[in-house]
Structures are given as C-alpha cells and as structure tokens.
Image 1 (cartoon, rainbow, N blue to C red):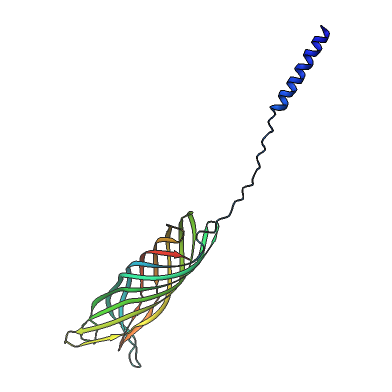
Image 2 (image 1 turned 135 degrees about the vertical axis):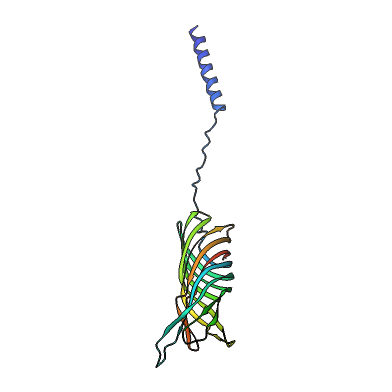
Length: 251
C-alpha cells in the first residue's frame, strides 16, 4: 500500500509539473513611450498687411476771423464764421509687425488713409469799418499717414483687445470765400500739411491661421495752424473721430 501511494503521489506531481510547463504564459510588458509636447508658434506674431474702411464724424473746428495787425492797426477780432464738423468716408492700407509674449501682443504699425473728411460753414461778419459780408470756409482732410504703436491682451486665444497711439501727418485743403453787401466777392486757398497724433482702441478676431478681422475707434487731432487770406486770418484746428473695420493677412 505504501508503495502504491508513493507511486500515485509521484505520478500526480509529474503530471502537474508537465501541465504547468506546457501552459505557462509569459507576461506582456508594454513599452512606455514618453509624450513630448511640441510648443505651438505664437499665432499672432509676425508681419502683416491689411486694409480698412472707415467713417469719420464730429470733427469740431470753430472758425473765427481776425484782421491781421499792421504797422498802424492792431489785430482785432471780426467775428465768428461758424463751425466745421469734419466727416466722411475714408479707406486705408496698413502694414505692421507684432511680437507675442504669452497673452500680450505688441508692435508698430504704419498706415495710410485717404478719402474725403470734410465740411463747410458760413457766417455773416459785420465788423466796424467794413461792409458786412458773408464768409464761407471749407476744410478737407485728404490723406493721413500714421505710425503708431499697438499693444493688446488676448481675451481669448483668437480675440485680441488692443489700444494704439502714435504720430500722424495730414494733407489738408483749406479754402475761404466771401461776398459782401455791395456784391464784391473774393476767395483764397491756404492748404497745408500738419503733424498731430492719433489714439484708439479696438478688437481683432482671428478667423484662420493667416486671416483676421478688426473693428476700432480712433481720435485724430492736428493741433492749430494759422491760415491767412489777405488781410484776414483764422486758426484751423482739424480733428475728428473715426470708426473703422478692417482685415489683416499675417505672413
């Protein structure tokens, strides 16, 4: 009996060992591949060109005429000849370059606007010593070249809120004509170029990797400039507000 039990136990051990040997499955080891994050290039950085379409309004320029001083007569005020409220459609082209640091975007922009920002006004002057006369004054801002610095913050990755400020130079037509109560007439031109400043604020929305659209408000002011018409002179103070829409293409 002991011999049979020993043989049975040995056979069971050998059979079990053979079963384990034939059914062994090696563990599968998966290779871990490290994920390397590739930083995306700043979406707003680089050079760009674009175009704008705008409407200028509320350009307040009060017109008052003075008699120019001479060796025998002091300067005197002849009267108020109305107010020029410059307004009109304008278009423009622009080019610039931007740097991006996280959510901050900034850089210079050069622009050239053209169009008809203009108005005319008339006023009746009744100075002592002169025959009363009707004075008509006309002003027109034809071209404006500007160099501004624009800086902004990304409200969203594709939406930029920006401000701008810089210098501008305008080409301005300035005309005057009169007719007095005796029927005499006269006219003169006193066109000029004037350097001033432009400030503004706006939003720019990126619609693709290369293309964006914008809307902005700006204020342009060109200071004061004395214009002479014979024995009379006035102070031109051209300025206006401007609303623009535009499109930019990034290189």
